[in-house]
Length: 134
Image (cartoon, rainbow, N blue to C red):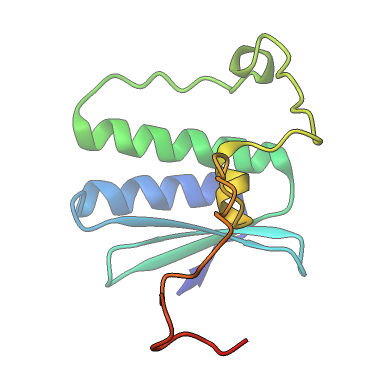
């Protein structure tokens, strides 16, 4: 397993590894919160390369590399563009009323939305046989 020091070096090695064996390459991303790094690993089961990113800009460049490799695999043109947060949710999302329960929440709590009052009177055991003594 080779840990590369620069992102440019990782990109060159990743593209070379992909060109050599395009159908055997796997790309793995793992976040280590204790170290504050995102680990990127590219392998074809024979050769493995790694790069650890500590900055968000590096993660964006790796994402573009991943899109580029996927586009090459499927023979489509590369259209890697940065993600814009404003385009994801152009309108504000309404906040749910916490005092009002949804149907799934009432089912989870065991209370049915359409509860019928229980009938008073004799139980289903009926009569003297099998019933409880009072």
